Length: 286
Image 1 (cartoon, rainbow, N blue to C red):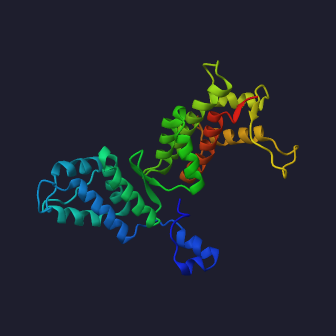
Image 2: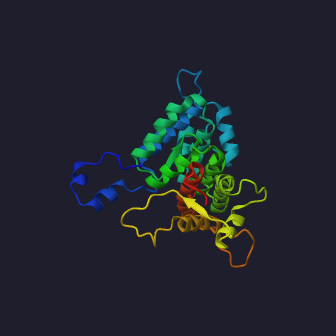
Image 3: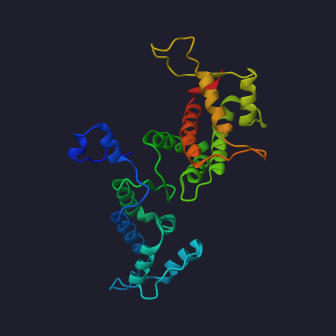
């Protein structure tokens, strides 16, 4: 996502490690980015009927306070409200921005795009998901592209969007993210390999693949470097399905460890690839 970002000449002429360090995402927002985000929030709460621009609309502030359980100073107008935003810790402040993004009007697309570009320029590790209308973590460029393609598949779109939300949002829940990924896969896998089985699940399909009572056909080309003996795409696809299916325990056990946020974010790329392959017919029943 950041590969096309302008890089200073002295960095371009330095070692590759210097470029990677320069382009690396940062955990803390810069003062310039925070100022941009504060300005965006102020646009939302400002009283547009007052020509001085110093007053805000309490009806726009109260929902923020109620939803986020915050008490923001605004008795003296915009100035006190702005100061209270500046004093919030980063996560609470981002939650305010996230609320405003989520409740933005349909006509605010240009403002959301400007906010998105500001976050990209600062190489902050959060971005604006304009379609979902929320802030979320930036995924590696390759994973972003795969997830975007999967979100374009109607049968899996709602589940993949839910998976992205829980894996990358401000308050991630990797368990819910992995569960949503399984449901996204079921939405495309079951019609492809078990269209007449009303009780089919991804677990049942995997059981049949393990027992060799079901086979897959994978329409991926074999390069000249890969030998026919080692080129086994169906086994790779099954392994990818296993990765997503086995990412969490469905039944409570004493030693069961929940998936981590990092694992859920990595699995988005695996699930997205499978959604694409099954929905386009690259993988089908053998």
